[in-house]
Length: 325
Figure (spheres, rainbow, N blue to C red):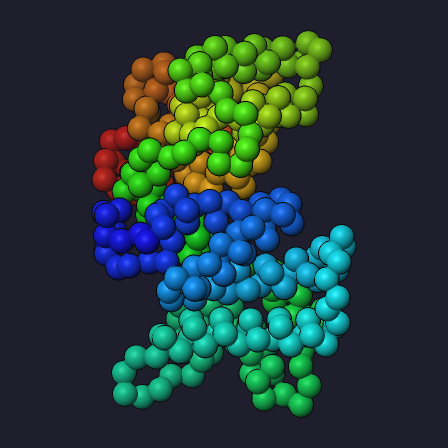
């Protein structure tokens, strides 16, 4: 099980190590039902090993329900009635609110759940839905509960998964040795990245000359998805941006390609955008290469391609105001 060996505040955790945690996160945010259910099974295993964080428990619970709900998963073969779905979704709402709101009760005088929710940025309408599910004469409608399920996943991703990933990444946890081919894909040799970067740059150079943006995005995502390490992907993107400027006649198309590829890869590699934002800003200086890094940072940030770019920029410029004029 994971413990203080990561460099983070130590406590025994149910996952074997943080790479197992990352594998679960990637599965929970995966595109296929198979990926999601495999991650849900991992959460089930963690429940057996020990107490799991509320965010992990509820994420697994909600995704399992959604995978068996024909509204979200038309191909499901699960025989679950609407009444059962209402009960399951309602239970998830109740458990989330109890786990998040009740733990925030402080002091001798009890605060209202609504006031606590407002203080911590928790969706107040979920608190109202919990009250309806607990004390109402009937359960909330399935339509409202399905919206609640989507809202819960967004909230937990923002306030637990993405935040935890950023903290771990900042401590260099994912820079440690990690097994390759964790999902069965053929991986590129780590030492072959320069050759691949040259091919990527050639694809960008051919934009408007027989190569369209959509084709280039598919090429980038297909090529980079086969790279074993997130660090390698980030270095390859940095290599491309260092040698290609967004400020050209075809600059918008070039930005479209990198933004499209980065947005797709972020799903499989959570935190990739944040890492790229940090790496680009670390290269900013008065040289031509440094200025180009800033151009790419601004271009990709405007496209919302880099997760957490504003936070990274604020953090780095607060420590070093001379970084950006």
